[in-house]
Image (cartoon, rainbow, N blue to C red; front, side, top):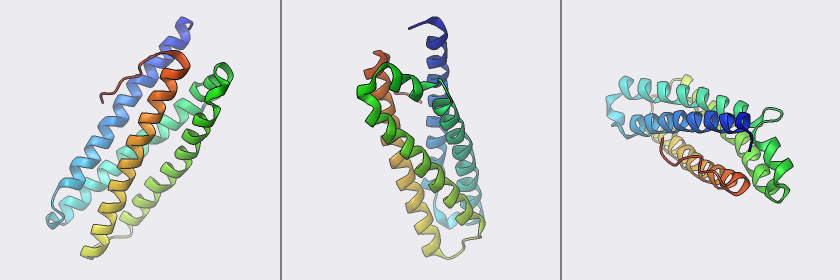
Length: 151
């Protein structure tokens, strides 16, 4: 692996940590009691907004021409199916985070709506954890590089 691509993977690693921090912030916000009302809604909204930003950055960083997924397909064609799963995840994860932000913006006040929102956001976090695991495995299989499990 050339030095330029190694530096790119360091950028992917750093961004992975940022995305992990955004996920942790959403988890912390969701763990607050919904009885806090406006405070709970604001914390969840802020965390979802940050997560949406970091997720869009992640997609841009990994899907750009010549970037991670293009390179894996070219250098390790046996991993193409795994890349396709990651790309499909990107579409679905972005759509879900945008849906949750829009749902939140509609002004939920009913306890059942809030509980449903919390449950959907928790499922989103679960999907993101699995997405990151698969991404880490793909990078390791393609380059024998540990992208990092922390953050």
